[in-house]
Every structure is written in structure tokens, then in C-alpha cells.
Image (cartoon, rainbow, N blue to C red; front, side):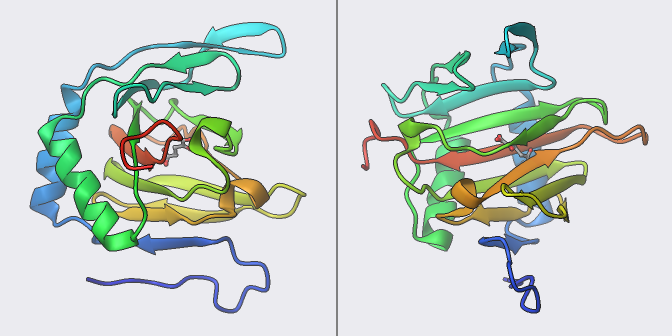
Length: 201
Ligand SMILES: O=C(O)CCC(=O)C(=O)O
């Protein structure tokens, strides 16, 4: 398995690790098709008193009792793990050495679906969580920027890849998947996260 350590020459590298071929093309294709039939929801988010649709579809699977509230406005209640998602969790845990209790799935139907600058620092994940992010489908730009300011660093997350955001990443960095007007296929992203109420914690 190819593993790249990025930003060796950068004096403030983000604490991430990118594995482009974490899944074989066949594994990634099968998982993409499985994910198309997950229970996708169009949720609304309230930011600064204004309620609007979340700019992508989402859903959550995981251990019972691991409800996930983000931006103080969107409450996700996990559905039971599917066999395919459990198998993927196991593979990621073996690769990374971290344990995960939930997976939040985001579905970007076109280039106009996106997720804005944010950090995944919800208290329900505990202190300084590691988050493992699998990409399926179209390649999209993913940007990381120090939360104290500075230039974004661009990644192109490919079909079947794994991006591990290590402990500290959510405390020091923010990230986003910006919109693009280029014609682009559908992308599904799976972020595996710990939860303080999880079976393994
Ligand atoms: O789609 C991605 O690669 C990022 C997803 C994300 O930032 C999140 O779920 O918090």
C-alpha cells in the first residue's frame, strides 16, 4: 500500500496522512454503490439566526446512543451499522490504530454541493479526536487552513483514498470542500469518528 507523508518541507504541516489507494478500484466501486442506498437526508442548519438547507445530503450510521449534534443546530441520530460500513471501519481501525464509533456520510450530488470552513470539534467526540475520511466517486478539492489564518493547502481527494486527520487537526486547523462550477460527478465522503458514548470507548 502506497503511503505518502506530505509537507516534509513545510514548517507548519497539517497533522494529516493521505493514502491514495487505501481501497482497490473494485472495493471503492462496490462501496460507492452500497452508499447510494443509504438513508440520505436533506437537513437544515441554523447559522447566526438564519436557517438554510445544508449544502449537501448527509446521514449517520454507528453505535446506538452516539447522537451527534453539530453547529448547535443539526442533530444526527445513528442508524445501525451496515455490514459494508462495519467492514470498512475494521479496515480503517487496523490501518490507523484508532477506534471509531460513528460514520457521517456526506453526498455531493454536483459541484454545487459543498461544505464550508469548519473544524470537527464537537464535544461528543472527546478531546483531540482522530477522524478518518474515505472518498468515493468524483475527485474534489479539499482545503485545510490554520485556524489562526494563513493560506489554504489544497488536496485532491481521490476515489478509494483515506485521509487521516490526526489528533490536533481539529484544534489547530479548519477545512472545507468548496463549490466548483466545473461539471463534476457525484462524490460520497465517509468520516469515521470516535464518540464518548461509543461501545469501544
Ligand atoms: O467531504 C469531505 O471530504 C469533508 C467532510 C467534512 O468536512 C465533514 O464531514 O466535516
